[in-house]
Length: 162
Image (cartoon, rainbow, N blue to C red; front, side):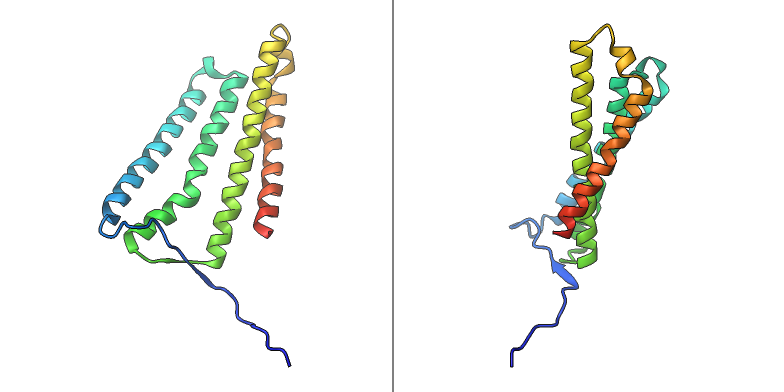
């Protein structure tokens, strides 16, 4: 008769940063400052692009989208890390860990696809400067940007499943 283990994992133990006993509050303050400056800096970039009509070009359209990704991307892991530093709780639920991995991969891969789209934009402006406005019109820029999301979603789904 073979015995099988029928238990399931409900929590994972976070090891954190080693050799930091007593430094948690200083690390929390440091990470909080970096997180807030990241959010505010990218929000400022996004709002500047929205507010200035001179910046309504394809390059700044893509930079505005990149600023949004750079607001969302650090928001996946940083709050839990700062919560860990404040509460000194060393566990995360299995579902919480899986959702963090899922969103981390979705946003990370989508951002990489957006970098590819931005590269294509620069390629067109360098190689076809006279036809740039025709090739990279608003509809094309929107389609390229929206097209990055399905790739990120598929990538994040596969990696989370694995």
